[in-house]
Image 1 (spheres, rainbow, N blue to C red):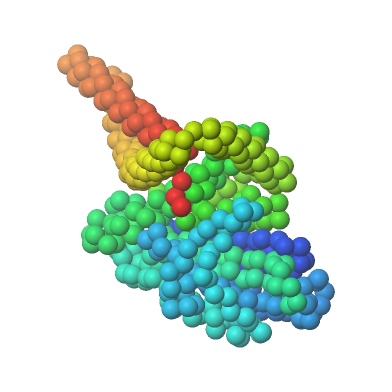
Image 2: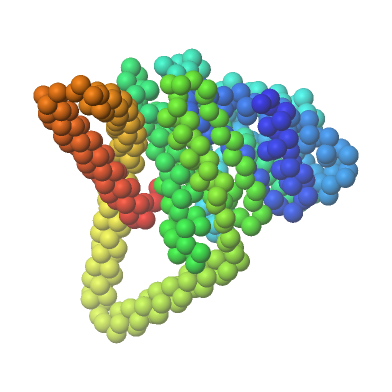
Length: 433
């Protein structure tokens, strides 16, 4: 399948969507193992988006036209927990949430593009600045998640009329792929796997309960926080491109990628943002009222006491607040570290479970072949009593071995489920700011 076919069925409809000028948020992200062609595919999509976007704007057939709309590009990466501007000397950026619940990347610089060539020059600059390293699986492995944001803004007001995000996720890696890595490469792999797991947890949590009570851990990583609006906004459209390698040695990676993609494909998310905002606002207002009543009550009490007692009470309250804040920060750090350990344990146990399962299948096949030969021998007319006795003895050994294989796999499965449950409980308790 070439890039043109992929583009026509993935990103092309999203270009028309953002050009409607209604503030639509469109996202395309590529997921797959290292070396499966994610970056190559995304670069092809980027070039076709450039041509298609400017052609649509210049045609005037959509509300976003050349006279009213400015096209700008921002490009940044998430590497090792840090966000870096790829178009502005890799300067460090901060990810914050404003009063409206919108995720804002502070310090991110946008560059205006007046034609497709200038647009592609900006994209090429960003791609060259991205963090890459040589690994066992790929000579130029991307070690960061790269997010290219294309904004359509109103010329007069600067209001956002549409946004397309092209996300090239770093490749997933199993423990066996990182055996010869140095400490830095292993740390990068752990960070990549942790953020991909956080994304998977968000996808799994979305739509699990129709009443919306399921906790969705968007703050578990910078990646999920930045992609939050592509899953929750009523004006959002999201496409995932799953890339796989054809080699037999990549079969387990391929199955994992397809399971991941199928989980996203089957999601049906219905979220009423207005109700959510109203409930949140009312909850905050109630909390403010309660705090105001408590403060007013405290003020009345303090006014009725002597100056020395008032100062003592004020100092005591301040110390209690500082102590509570310190304890909360310490607990948050502890929960975060515990969650990261659980997330890494999931990847390790998942790999161990898959390897055990495949090993069981292989050994069971060998035992089945042996049983077939045994049956043929024992069914012969000239079979002796000693041969029948040997058949029965060996059959008992085979049955015992099969039982051991099943019990061992069940133990692995139970442990994996317990770790998944533990990680889900931890993800509800902490947030990463």
